[in-house]
Length: 195
Length: 438
Image 1: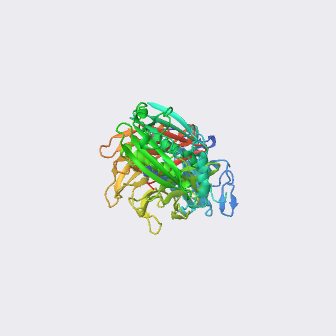
Image 2 (image 1 turned 180 degrees about the vertical axis):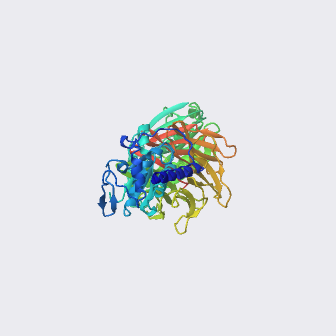
Image 3 (image 1 turned 90 degrees about the horizontal axis):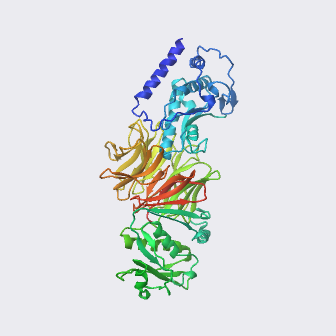
């Protein structure tokens, strides 16, 4: 229970930090993100497992042993494996940059992985949809990436393990010009070095 | 409201000929000019000057047309109407031969006439005269001795002369524009004449390029390249092709803007986490100086024409808005108050107006704000406008938009009355920037 409380406290601090920034975005055009199906639902059961991971001195064996792939550039969790660790994308609303509540377990899972694997190195890449200024979107993508990085480090990952960057609107995953495409493009990608 | 559409095929072959002569010159990689320039002009409530443009005597001796280029420039400005001259026989080629009654009968107010004289050294002498059909005064009487490769450039000069004589403002037909073309898995930074002819490639990359900005003397280009796996600011000498990465700090390095004297660059760096504005020597020699410290995104700076202040985009108030900050210290002052998303500011050369992009519902449009009165005007009727920039005479705003899912360049006059669109077959075209006077 102790660890759950600790995590809640961290989350509260984080939320407070977010809400106290003078730059809370005005929702210009509130658009519900439509993430890929596998990234949509947060299973409550995943929370204890993730929280256990942020206190490595008291490890709780995960239900299924974690698969780790190794490369010359460091270890990484194989893509597409089950659970939050298999998820590599966080989706956002238009002109928003705070990590959405339903994506926080994904960030926690990767923070836990980074904590367990000191040699792992994660690239956090912010992206935006095609509307509006390229330069403002470049800055917005960076802010999204920095937000994810801040949550990762608050959850125990080392600063040196994570590099935040932005492609702005220059690297869409969906070349379409409608809300469906835009929702997929407003994202932060988590890319492990070596994978 | 008058709308007309023309397909301009003039100059296609000539542009190619000119380019062949320029390969290896100027450190630029020459590519064929676009196959077709499809130009749609819309004018609204514009009092157009009726102008008769007569073929130059012996123009058939030239390797490339001149009068058609002059006419295209002037008509494209929206301020001139080409008068139909069919039936006037013989056509005069100098002022004293003009029977004014012929032109007055066709409502022509001005007549442009001229002739071509080949020179022994291979060059051509072009003589042009502009005559007022009512007062019969000769308003322009000039001759140019021109090498074959410079004919198109001279045609733009003639258009500039006519434009200035008849409107009182300096023409911008001899200027150049820069833009990015994305297609075939490549990003290409191009420069071209203001009419989109004579296109040349400055840089071709597999990684994105954004934010090209001409130095005030037109000799260098600053831009943002993603080649080094992160956005970095590069300054390239257009004559030699020599490139220097001037800002490549951790995080994003972007949004270069030249100071009016060409010595400094304002840049946006996110080396401390969030995007902030810095000023640094344009040759990359010194350390960037942070202009402000905020907890918000500050980016897209441009210098005011007097060089004393920056105008920039910031979301410090909760949504992106445009602000102005003096460079010698002092607080930033907000400039935009209507709309929840105002970005990409540029100041007119005389410092009196600002163009920017505003989101309104689902559309993003080019706006103009009078900086004295604060009055704003929506200039465009397109949907996803980006990156507006002023022509050096402040008369026209060049911007990028989307038509049929494709990025295209468009222009609108600063009074919103004349609109035009360029369409090429070259893929997505975006991030245009209008260069300075030559």
